[in-house]
Image (cartoon, rainbow, N blue to C red):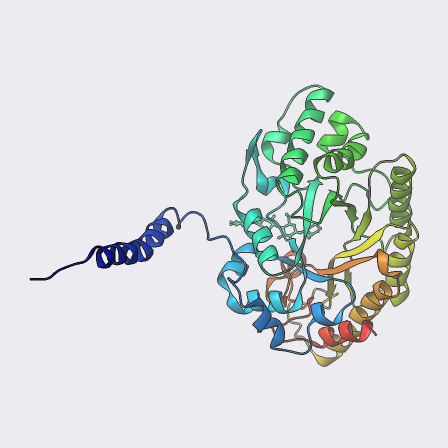
Length: 371
Ligand code: G3I
């Protein structure tokens, strides 16, 4: 006869509970919602200690990349490279209005939540991109009809929902992206058409209202190639400051190329910094295939030119006062997943990591720019 004491029975029940309850929770919905990263999910300290050099270790200001959410989830080398090198993350797409806003009051948060949790678990900051961008307006909004006040209401609702959800978790936002054209005039968009140019002030005011501590950026391209455009951007920034509209920084996308003169890059960064605002090099990449040659291969000459250009840009940010150096973000992580080849319909190698995540010469140009 087998006797089971009360203690043994309790012990067995506990073992069963410990083994099976988490299993049941894991099954529930796992195929729909990816597990949210928690501290300890990634061996961040081991990854950081695996090398004496890493951008996040050696730089006095944050380095980051625009991340592809599915590659982050599925490619361990990509994920570990991100953890090792970056302490600032931007979502390449998942925090755009088109991705988040499914309808009035309807939001898709899963991917953005994942990225925020990943950053928190791995001791990184998140730069939100982008609350309002003419090119990421969902159809339900382009089709929306209503009075000026109705349009203000939907803008307010969206910004309040997004900034509010990540209050205290996202450190900065591109509040407004690409609102100025190369000729220095304001770009047309549904917000301008229906609210008037006042929509710009409102974007910043609504964001500040939703999170009093988050840093608010105006983000645009072209500072390095158009003096008309950079003058217009500086005018917008100084007008906002003068009128008490909350703005903390300027994002300079800097999608540039090896043929761009060094002086243009320095002038772009120094002119933006003359506003006194924080400066974020927010979408940096350097095209090498400037003739869009379909048969070009990456060679030592291109690599050296790219390295030198990376150095110039990083050094220009490095030379600013410390409180204005917000950070340096690449638009992507590695060459194989850059937007450039698709955009220009030719091969290119714009980023500091190659397809095997090896550090390219460009990487060492960056390190040289930090001296
Ligand atoms: O994920 C879908 C896929 O399911 C679908 O099959 C495919 C078919 O078109 O589209 C995929 O989505 C694409 C997405 O990139 C992911 O690859 C979108 O169509 C495409 O429009 C989107 O392009 C992004 C673009 O912004 C527009 O949002 C680029 O990845 C992204 O690099 C680019 O980033 C912009 C910055 O936000 C602002 N500054 C310029 C920069 C480059 O254009």
